[in-house]
Amino acid sequence: MGTEPRKLCPVSWAHRPANMMNRPPLKVVSGMPILGPFAENWANVQRFQAREGDLLIDTYPKSGTTWISEIVDLILHNGDNKKTQRGAIYERVPFLEYAVPEMPTGTESLNAMESPRLIKSHLPVHLMPNSFWEKNCKVIYVARNPKDVLVSYYHFHRMAIVHPDPGTFEEYLQKFIEGKISYGSWGDHVKDWWKIRQQRNILYLFYEDMLEDPKCEIRKVMKFLGTDLSEDVLEKIHQSTTFKAMKENHMANYRTIPSTVMDHTISPFMRKGTCGDWKRHFTVAQNQLFDEYYEREMADTDLTFHF
Ligand code: A3P
Ligand code: EST
Image: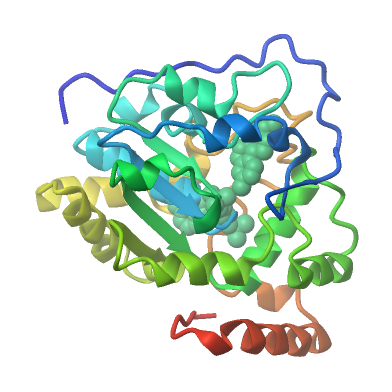
């Protein structure tokens, strides 16, 4: 928590052909579907050397990764939101498995970064590079109810052309249930991290709790990080990480990415930020089908979600 903001490796989008990542097909690595370009750097991801003091933020996509990342960076900078303006969220918290042609990969950005590092990943437990466990790194995991994840992920597919075409909502729902989307099965992801949370250094949070009582969840993060910030700083962090504040914050809202890559006019990255938007998307029949899937998935766990 020094006075200097943590240093960055800035990412430049200057010379990139507009259609470079036009909906490439998914690839399968170690049994898991992943974005085609990400698969190209897989060997480097598995060989990645975590360092003591690294903090990993892991989620299934669309579960509040950006939100918790902003909160953690603010905590580490004593709530000073000028310091968190030093770079875009993907520069401040590099994405471990990120790889697109002609850009520094996540592993390259991280290798060049000074410790202590914040690292974002969507990898399931069994595909985490071993070094994270060897170095006993702290992990913050955020889970979100799968109906809202599905809706958010569907719109993310529409706006970010690194993803395959999601098809209709009905078609996408089917793919989600079958785990035929990037990062595979939602159920296995949330359950596997839940299972190991007590054996490892893991803080397991829920998106819905963060919405309901943000200050309480921010306090949990502070305690986990071993920081003791005043109520004033806590309030400042809370105000800087409301949905409205983050939607307007260009260093958090992905608006710095060219619109040929992420088109916010199709659907903004900071879209709704609520619990229950799925009700505006699911038909009665789709909801019934999904409830059956959820019952099957969650039959062997005590993990539960708020919808
Ligand atoms: P919606 O698409 O449902 O709005 P991720 O960062 O893991 O990709 O997750 C993105 C989701 O988190 C989006 O959900 C986004 O709007 C939501 N989100 C981001 N910042 C948030 C905040 N401060 N408060 C509530 N939701 C937030
Ligand atoms: C992929 C999955 C995910 O859950 C979040 C993000 C955020 C950053 C995205 C990346 C992704 C997919 C690839 C990009 C990247 C920003 C630019 C890059 O092309 C769209």
